[in-house]
Image 1: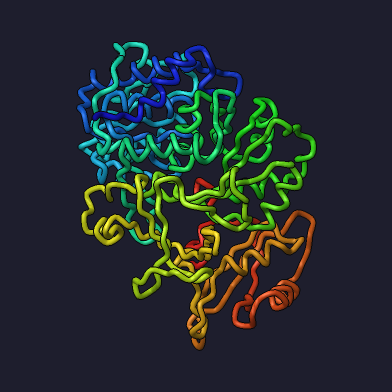
Image 2: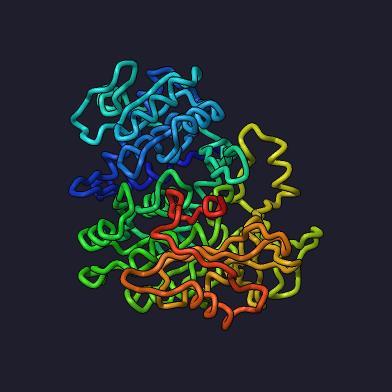
Length: 509
């Protein structure tokens, strides 16, 4: 049996050839056009000598060229290596070398970084430049122009007979504990996760209009905002960079009805001073992932925009969706829901024993069709993280009597103060309920007596003032004596990843 992720695009192009697949500003691409461009890009890769199984790296923001090159690579049986566009030249070179990518497709706006990284890696033979103006067919010396390649190549009209367990995507982890590792996601991993997202998680259809604010180089954006809507024959509205105002403009002008974001995006939309000027009446469904969303943020967003946020959970290594709050079951704020169909979750304590008692913390382990085949060329890391099919996530959670899971915190973020375990998220939930706070992060800092002490880093809402002493006193009223922050610092903003996840490691430095 063969299976190729490109089937998602091909089938929708067959069923809905004239329907808009991608939209960006005033530009629209039909499914027939998108499929044709993807086939021609596959032809271009073939003409360049890219062989089956060789990797193609993408250094692209949320633009149509990402989706064209993504599915075009699958038409060429070339696994895709999506790269974070915020990488430095050193990091680009590392990812190209580690993945063994033979081609790099780069956005003209990031060309300097791309070229510098590309030149350091002899095994990467082809630099392909995507210009913002498709009519611009120029490219720097030694590089190819993406549009020129597409317009000048013969299409590959048949999907290759890749196997379900063949690698479709190598997605690099953030590398918070060392060098980034490439999670090998198979055609079956990616195909089935997208399909289940449209059928078991959110009811996507040809009428779906999804806003892609999440980076497509990230697994959440890739599966939930690109692949799943395309599988359903819906329209994906591309936003190259998230800002609250541009997101509001797109939500209103394109009549978006499906929005997926990370908690910081919902915070930005919630606190934007011009939010009330926009008509979001078409918005029917919102999902959140990437990091736990504070309950207070979810409640306030629900009330303000009259649309419920469904929270889910997953990782790069799980394609990503592993669990979700579902429309046909009660939603529990603060919960990541129940396991996706065909996926098992369990909790394991520090001694490796499976936790069976409700509301008892343990590390989440995942088993199922969504779990990666392993880390690219790292058998030791694979063996360490996957045992008997169970992938150890590093996330601590509890499970209630109804089978719903609740993230407590990242295992590595847990604070050990005077022998007591303190989970930052618990204190952050308290802080987010304070009317003056826009963003909050709680971290552990070294302490000569207690080992670690608790520190809160705060961003205040515009025009609001509160003192360190007031916030410490507020926390003392709501958490046990060993849990409240002993220090509070105020910042204008918090450091974040490209997907909006707060970078606590930078706050500790």
